Length: 130
Picture 1: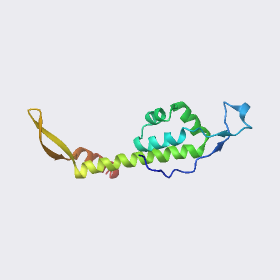
Picture 2: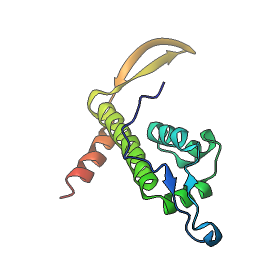
Picture 3: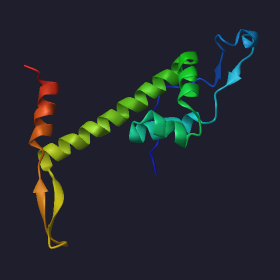
Picture 4: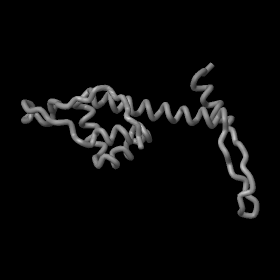
């Protein structure tokens, strides 16, 4: 169950922008798929997966991002949360390792803790390039 994510305020009404000039005087309600899209995006960081889960398209998402600054900021916040989770998992694997099964003749006989030196090296280079 995804937890509630404190996104920036989302506009409830927005004014259409071109190519919809004949509707310029009308306000449009924010589509009902936005909450699902943002929750899945924050959890997985994958725009295609989030769009499928929200039963929308990447094109509709981009159109709404272009039209509504609050939604655009919420998408950026969701992506940042997904990136933070990814970095946290990479750090955990690099520093604390993960359990890998050892098999003998097709049967699991033990576990070993595996560390990722290359992942740790890449993280260090990203944080301290010199």
